[in-house]
Length: 354
Image 1 (cartoon, rainbow, N blue to C red):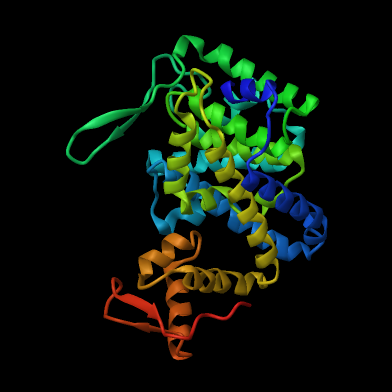
Image 2 (image 1 turned 90 degrees about the vertical axis):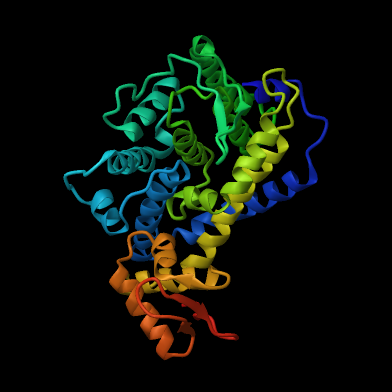
């Protein structure tokens, strides 16, 4: 809530980069209705890819991974879950489903925050409950050293701080202290600084980001995974979060690095949405297009495992098939033998955009 308190005092001016992002996002939102008039089948393919990528990436940011061959089954099927990691991924899928289905009709309240935490944490004992003990953010080094990266709000103060944050979000948007997208990013920053739960704060923050986008009428997150874009820019995520959280407790922090970062993620989502709508194939060709897109975006050598990570929900056999076709066309070449062999794009040849 410390960022909202800064905004309540009125801002002298906006950083130029923030103004640029807001202008670009306003234009993108204006085109949104045109994009969503595309064929229902095209949009369904994008929604399914985004659901898979979001559930996998949001957990992977926190170090939670599951077997690649199980991703589709865990997210879309009704299997017996093998371990806690699969429970976490399935739980995030359930929380995502709630946000996507209800959209702007789901109010941003403390009850909603706790419910999203309960859904994405599954059967864990404190799912949906605020932390009972202090939970500072600790950075641990390979040599055993550690440092406190950020001291979060004490457990005893957490309920009051969350209540104030939700109230300030409403006041800020009603009284237009700042542009609503700036308020969205500010809420995300303050939520992470409060750190209301023992575990799962990052995942809930990303669910709330998606929910608030729906509230403000920005719907790219339905078709392009915001979580995957954050994972792809994870180093910058942590850098800007640390930079903007310094001095937060005293209200002397600089929120703009993190706000800039989140706005850049939203802009990237709209850019990809527009690009992908021109590329989306029928369901039969959608996975081929996904693998080809991953290869285009990889710099240097890559392996079968790299492509599997970049294309959750695409089977290893399908990835192999696409690689074989591209090898025959002279687009890529294999540099070794066996499943761990490295591949690379041939100079001047990249998979064509569909």
